[in-house]
Length: 426
Image (tube, rainbow, N blue to C red; front, side, top):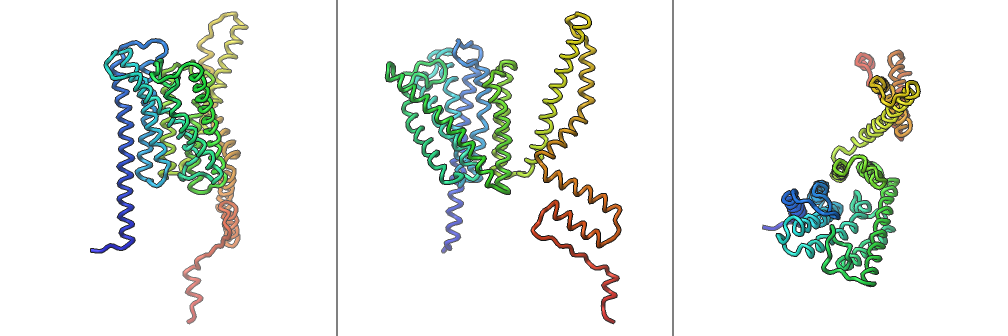
């Protein structure tokens, strides 16, 4: 039996796709097993209090839950788009997350909860902690390769090679630094003295450089968006929305707002933000319901602005009522009536305020759709009153040109059956 060249190519492609799928899910399985092992250690050591310097068991568990989506996302993308390197980037990130997140539970259980229960806790902690190098090296490529798996232009090659070179230098130096482990663990390979201090300075400089590269890589998305159109632009919108949720958590965290909510709730919100990132990236790469993003962004802007406005009005109303009541009566306690009145006022303002915000956002961010909707509404009003067919034909063409903006538009009317019969020669 002989095969044609095209049949052989299809067979080879099928084998490579099968291999890629097997490899992707194998890496995902290893990452998830590492996470599961870390969760088991946390559960076993939960009753043992950790000294100062260690992350609480609860925080370690929440952090682990937050990284489960990374290897799963990478496996889904790599198995369905094996030729796109972007899925493999997420698989590498998932593996690096799993290694790094296992380091502290392993050391905490072996050194504090059950001393001597696990082998070489300090050495294992150091080896697992080296996953942070892979993590920081791959982070810029999350931006640089989205969504096509290729760099935006050849000009970005220097940045890509620069980040990889930093990773190659940082990885061996990380084993020699006393600050590279997870938790208050003495690193067995640490170098002291002036050499150790020099290594720490180099590592700090490398990390800062990589984080600067991450910011520059994020700018590449703006460059890509300006030249993109159609599907690629919708993919970038999904990524931007998901990244906005994550940025909304990172910025308050840097400002110390997390102290107001507590570590447990704040870590849970971080997990939800990462979940939104995984979902947004997955939808964008796999192109599932891409064009729903415009509706989601619109609703997010409307109800996000509405929530902030109502919260400010409520706090302002309650504060003003408390100040007035205190001034008039001299009492410190605020009556429940002021809170009830403020709540009713907010409820009465909800719909009018929502409509105004919706109208403002449509005019400001969706001007073309807003103008098109107004044009169609005006045409609908004329259509109910107009009876002249020639006039309506001109109106239809004018509406199509204004709303759809085609290069050419023409209108063909099917002749009436009776008129067609009159034109037939006897």
